[in-house]
Image 1 (cartoon, rainbow, N blue to C red):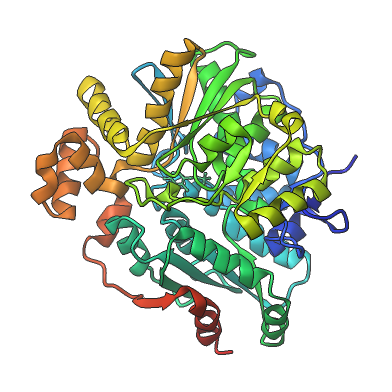
Image 2: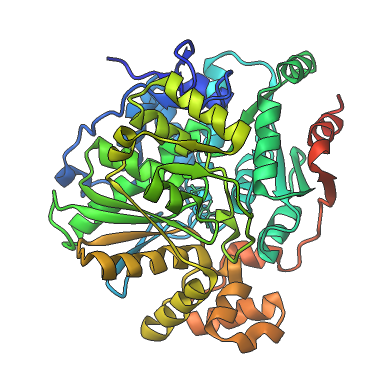
Length: 495
Ligand SMILES: *Cc1c(COP(=O)(O)O)cnc(C)c1O
């Protein structure tokens, strides 16, 4: 059987990988999913001898079946180069009995770089393969990190424009500064008076608007997405789970074939879904532990089988996880429904209409790989402080949510399986929350004083991404209401 992509909401649409990357979202509003999950065709032992780039090729060639070897290797080598501040790309740090997989060594110091470094190359290659002549307009909703990583990836990439919508009052000061100082003639950053879900829903509505698509086409444009609804985001994220397993084997922390747990601080469910795909490709994994902050809609879902977004949206110190509609969960729901697009479409309709859906007991039984947990604000701060005091290692607020959930899980389950914690951001990106967790007295200092203090106490150099914004000029100051998003896009495109 050849691997192709289908929509999670209808049987009709079958597209190639490059077409799925170009479109982002299926025409019926569903997400593209591979019709099967391929098996790795190299042994776990052989993986230990490969570099990050070589493993990326082994994983991605199985999903991006209409890319030639030359095209794919070109994309990989362009993406995973010295933009990362370590040749390992994703190093592992052992602390307090867990393995922290540091996914923040790219140019914007959050894990989004792992996929957004390569997406522009995958997308422009896809455009060429499909003879696309329109200019591609990347429309992106961000809870803080995707925006900057996508801007950095697409800035000045020929044939593309990028527009980022972020919640004006829902991101960290450093996240906002990183975005509004973005250079590049093809970049546009807009704050919205609303939260991340509003931004994401507004963007999805534009994708689904046929009339807008026609107008765009006439003006020589077409939309694509840099959000994790794009399989061009998801597939590169599988790579680091395969890679990290191989490094643990290589460093004799585990033997080949030994199962590991993976803990992922979760928002839109893209990162943990990538871990699930890695497991299904043959990487030995025991539990996939889904960590939420106070917006614990996923914790409740795994516990009860009911997904219910009708609740207060809480702003936390881990803003990239402040999400009530986790888009990528749809891909998992489709799978546990036996790849039945009709069942899935019904559930998603119910989510749009009533904000809630229930899965059957049979579907719930297929979620046994997952464990849900959550960590509230006080526990998250305590986790940062304790890990720092015990080991000297400073983690960011999102990673701390995962670490807190893992500590609880270990205590309750007595499961001593070796465990990887996905470390999704540098603590420098959330300096204020991190430092105040360590000592509330830091509250009186400025953001950049805290940056220097963090460098001192954590014994790590200030990342280049932070140095770059210290004195950078603000270049974007547009703010709009949720119902003005579409007009804002049209105005900027001169339509
Ligand atoms: C985006 C993000 C997350 C959530 O990842 P999802 O793939 O959306 O679940 C967690 N932590 C950080 C730092 C992020 O930027």
